[in-house]
Image (cartoon, rainbow, N blue to C red; front, top):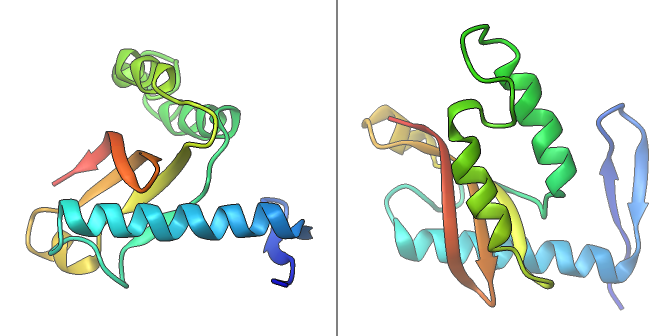
Length: 134
């Protein structure tokens, strides 16, 4: 039996995720990392960041806060990429993993870095929404 996963919330409070949720989270991270490595082996690997699964409302809140820094951008989650985000959300099905990713430092140092969100279903990439590319 796997122990509960312990995480730190945004306000710094330790929380314990139930075993099933912890296992699902670990599975999503492993599947997303593996799928991203297949898609771009040079940019992904142990040094790449893969976080999640994410909740749509949380992603929208965080991205809206990022866009608020740009007074000339549409004040919607993802700003000018809002239509792409809406399309991305329509693809999400129960059991899918919505994950944040940031490619490894090597990719950024060699001008092919990327960051954004990936939708993974049964170990395969369904869609990628890149929020930063180099």
